[in-house]
Every structure is written in C-alpha cells, then in structure tokens.
Amino acid sequence: MESFAKFEHEGWQRVADKYDSVWARSTRQFIPLLLDAVEVTLNMSVLDVGCGPGYVAAAAAERGAAPRGLDFSGEMLAIAQKMFPRIEFCEGDAQNLPFTDATFDRVLANFALLHVSAPERACAEAFRVLKPGGKFGFTVWAAPEENPYAKIIDDAIQAHADLEVNLPAGPPHYLFSGREEFRRALERVGFNGASMIFKLHTIQWNVPAPRYPFDAERDAGVRTRGLLARQTFEKLRAIQRAIEESVRRYAKGDTFSIPKAAYVVAVSKT
Ligand SMILES: C[S@@+](CC[C@H](N)C(=O)[O-])C[C@H]1O[C@@H](n2cnc3c(N)ncnc32)[C@H](O)[C@@H]1O
Image (cartoon, rainbow, N blue to C red):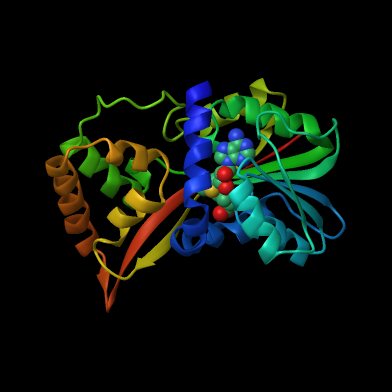
C-alpha cells in the first residue's frame, strides 16, 4: 500500500492544475447535499479532508462555519490557498490527521476516500478527531451498475485493456459494496451505524465532445490514467473508441450530458 500512496500522491501533484477545469464541475455538484447531510451550520468547526481546490471548505464558510482544509498534495493546497485566502489549509495525510482527538464538529471528505490506501484507517481518523456528537460526511462514486459514467469507462477497460499491467495494488475501486458494507465499516471504527444516512445521487456531467471523457481520464485522472498509460497504442485506441461510442448516446443539443452517480454518506459519533 506504500507504493499505492506514492502513486496517488505523484498523480495528484501532477494533475492539480487540471483538476478544477476537468473534474470539479462534477464533484462540486455534490457539495450542498453533503453539507445538508451532516447539517453544517453557524460556528461549527469543520475539517475538509482531501480538500483539493477547497470548495467544500469554502461552502462550509458560506454557511457560517469555521472550516479548515487538509490535503496531501502541496500543489492542490497552493491552488486552494490562492482561491480561498481567508481559509486555513494544511498539508497532511487523511490516514494520520495532524489534529488532537475531539477537535471538530464535522469532518467531510468529498471524493477523497477512494484515493487513500487504507480507507477504513481514514474513517477511524475522522472518528478520532470528531467531538462526541459530531458527524462525518463523505461522498464516493457509485459502482458501474448504478453509475452510467463509471460503466462507460469500466466497460471499455474490461473489453479492451490489458489488466495485467504493473500497477501498485490499491483498495477496491468503489470502496465498500452497498449500504450494509458501508454501515459495518463505519461501525467497526466506532461510528453509530444506526445513524447512517446513505443516498444515491446522480448529477449530469456536460462535456463538449465524445472524446472529452477519454482525454480527461488519460490526462487529468490518477488511477485510470495509470492503467491507460501502460496500454499499447492499439489497446488505447480501442478503449478510446469504445468510450466515444458510449458517450455519443448522451448527446443533448451541442453537448453530451452524462449521468454520474455517487453515494452521499453521513454518520454520527455518539
Ligand atoms: C478527487 S479529489 C477531491 C477534491 C475535493 N475534495 C473536491 O471535492 O473536489 C481527491 C483529493 O484527495 C487528495 N488525497 C488523496 N489521498 C489523500 C491522502 N491520503 N491524504 C490527504 N489527501 C489525499 C488528493 O490530493 C485530491 O486533492
């Protein structure tokens, strides 16, 4: 898992300047739901883990909370600090948070947990730094069966990619499978499973051309990019064609409107 962490860290450092224009248009759409799920209100201390460009922290500040952002990528943090100079951002690992126990009212992680080498360890750290009665909220992409965008990418890869390439082993691509597995994982680290809110939410990602998602995965992704970078030219072209063909089904006027689904999860420390 050490090499997976290094692989992810290098990946995020490399794509930090592309993240905002390519991916944030979809990840930002989940932020109001995430803040509602954990009921972020006035004066709450909030930690935004894996904050990237800092949008969750900024949205919490708009609700009158006192947010801080944390990310392990210095490049991401530089962007966040420039965009939101009044918010405090710091460098650190989601799996070893640099805060004492019971510091925050809320811990949030918008699309960060799929990137850490030990997601349960990150959940345990969220639990530790929460005050009693505090809440942890996170989003993770839904698996291909429930997520049309993930299915487009997954189908193309399963059909055409060489999956035996040398990539650092990481956690499952879609974390836990289903509501009850999420509940059990959260209970194992101390959360009150009965309090769990678990919602599947779908947004539309509007892209300008059928090849945009392939380019995005190849140039601005991390894990999928690693797989694509290790394919032969022929396999890569086959993956690209398959993705483009699927994306065309979502034509809407001049653009392509692809549904992307994620789980919005919230749970209490009681
Ligand atoms: C998909 S981006 C999400 C960014 C942001 N939360 C958003 O809503 O757009 C994942 C972020 O998690 C960060 N990250 C990944 N693994 C991490 C770790 N172990 N510790 C801290 N940050 C991590 C990456 O640097 C990246 O900024």
